Length: 132
Image (cartoon, rainbow, N blue to C red; front, side):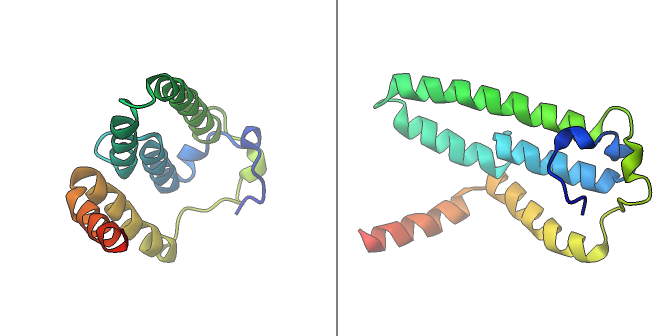
C-alpha cells in the first residue's frame, strides 16, 4: 500500500490502523518464536535436536536470534509508535474485510500450531516415514 520498505518513512501508524498494527505485532511475535505460536515450536525442535551435536554453533545461532529480536522490536517501534508521519495522512486506510478474510485463518493456524503442534507433526512424520 505504501510502496516503500524504508521503515524510517513510517511512524505512529498504530493510531491510524490499529487492526493492522495488532496483526503486525502478532505475526512478528510468531516470527520471533514467542511461546504459544508456531515459531516457538519449530525453533525449539531445531535447537533441541541440534544442541547435543553442535553446541557451539547452536549457541552462536542463539545470539543471532537475540539480534533478530532486537531488530524486529525496533522495526515495530519505527512503524507503529512515535510521531505520526504526515506523509501518510489520508493515504493509509484500515484493513478491509477481504484482507481480514485472508489473514485471520492464517493467524488461527499460527496459534493452533503453537498451542497444539502434534496434529501437524503427526502428518509430517507419517509423510517422512513413507519417503524414507
